[in-house]
Length: 125
Image 1 (tube, rainbow, N blue to C red):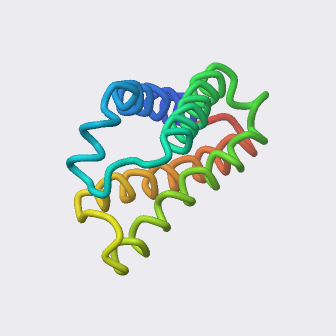
Image 2: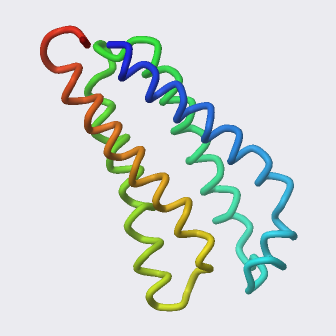
């Protein structure tokens, strides 16, 4: 189970490092990626939910067999952003830089799916 543990541990740490600073960057994000944020409740609501997922990833990494079922919604969580951003980019609704983060989420979705598959049978080789 070392593979699955590592995947979720790294994902949780990466997510926390990437999300926590966003709590202090509302105005900057509004300037750098116009239009300015007009509904801060959506902005902070997204951050809170996304941060909660990172905590789940850390918990999952502690006992991947016990929490294996939570890997399924974890894959869905990553696919949601990973697919939405390229579609929004094609509509000229997000900056090209966002494609990097979408690609990371799609990679994590694939790794989460692999972790799910690998924890279903025999112990990790």
